[in-house]
Length: 169
Image (tube, rainbow, N blue to C red; front, side, top):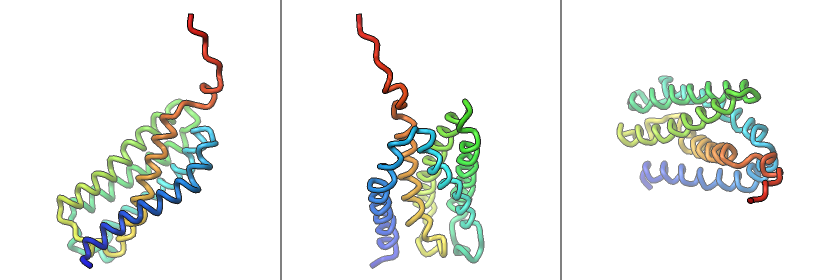
């Protein structure tokens, strides 16, 4: 089996596994909560995205890791983590919802950009070194939780759904 096939299989299986965890354990619990409360644990998960800085640490990754990938992934993740934390601290204020949207849009785009940069820079799976677990285990979970945050942001609030609608005249 080639290293590339093993790498992409690991990513696909990561999506499958996290999809199962989300559909069976995470979503059933979060969907019953008000959106703001349901989004909080997802923001906390994303506050750990500082782990992307490991792409910049010699000895953790190969010295041949393409800098175009490493820098974009590392700094994009730090910005996403910062936005997640800021969203947590401001969620109860008016700017909080805007920051959650900014975090979710940025964080999702950052992950897709990392995939793009990995492909265009010629990243080989062996260059990831000890960070191999990030794209195979962590990134699938992050993308799935971004999708859950989008769903929570876009669903009508329970309070609005419970109010009677005026009759058409």
